[in-house]
Image 1 (cartoon, rainbow, N blue to C red):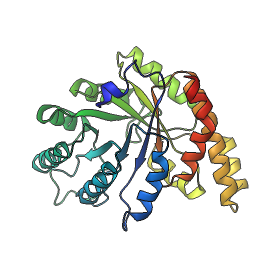
Image 2 (cartoon, rainbow, N blue to C red):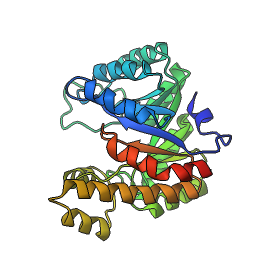
Image 3 (cartoon, one colour):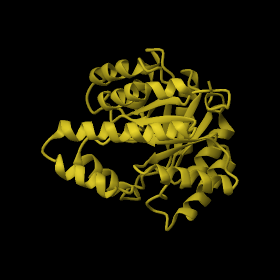
Image 4 (tube, rainbow, N blue to C red):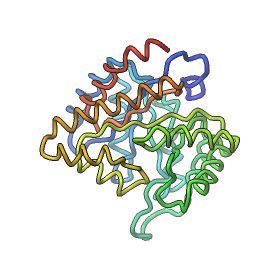
Length: 287
């Protein structure tokens, strides 16, 4: 199914989906983790673009996940891609039976040599995909603003361009304060953006993880979280358990307020995400 159908008002329950990335080594461990997550009936699994920018491992992983009977939504980044390479990859994934993609600009490289200049912004990629395929297109949203944007409203102006170009759903950056998400959705609605806005959930696993994420994106970390990270810095299992409990509470509130879905950034591990889903199973059945 395409994103419009997946997130239609006909769905009485929030849609569950996961994100994984191509591992550096073989796929054996990741496929094992995905098989565990498949018991929770995800509507799809998204695959991040490969680190080398060529997408080969991403496509190989796509095929392996599809072989498990799970729908896949690959990411497409464009800042280092030519129109020819994007078009070729789009044809390839459509032939593989893919219906949905997540269109992203991607990280700007430190160098400007030996890269294509066909795309600068994600809305250009959305327009290109819309013109050349029948794929449904998801885009990224940032409840606290993109790290390169001077403020939230500047970022929302860019989001409006992606929506106008043909986006069908918005997947948010992770957040730890649900109010940030709810306020963001309210602003989008007031700005005339009425697409489904799917919250991105990332369970806290380690101090290193949080340090890295907050260096790459605008993500508010509360004093409570900081205190727990410091308290459990030498107790990884205790910190992971805190992360599960914290994300469980987040998800319950989000479900109660009628979110269209929950998109889990799994970091290629099933443990925390599966525990959270076990915890919220009763809430999901209520909806």
